[in-house]
Image (cartoon, rainbow, N blue to C red; front, side, top):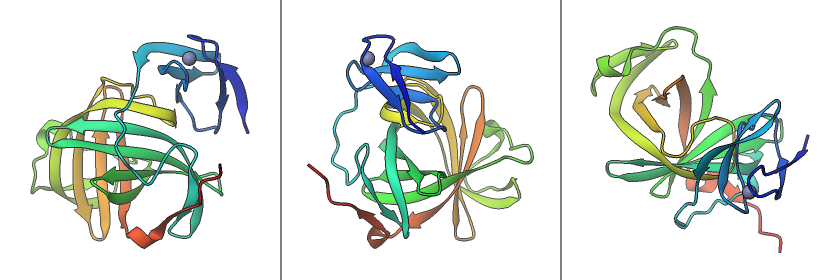
Length: 205
Ligand SMILES: [Zn+2]
């Protein structure tokens, strides 16, 4: 399901790689573009990333916990003590997932639909136990991050410069992450990835 389009800023060809894609960074001019039914809209922002060594890169393929994936995009979050990257993956069965990379450690997250109200960010403190969509979550971290940049194609519409408030916590063996942006709240449920559970295919050149 590839959809061929043109960058409205520089006219470079762009191929939309997946039906979940909502945000595209032009490989040529770096313009961040929002994908609508009617076409691509420039956001006026560009998103160059400082290159930090990683196993992963855009269009890399491999296996994660035995399932085949392709890397579609990356978003970098900057916070007080540094940054983390979120890699947007799609799998053979067409499902999306997010691999968070933080200082060489990986956590694999899937987004869950929120079925009940989430406590407001301001009311939650580290050490609290709160109920979020049926999960009893022990809050381990609370903070604010800024989107520092991105590349490739992404399934959400937070753009560089935007602030995200986040809560991290644990619920049994699950890692829970809640992100509050200007217009939505997203719940992700994840598990730590052991280093031998992430296998990349050899690069083809
Ligand atoms: Zn362009």
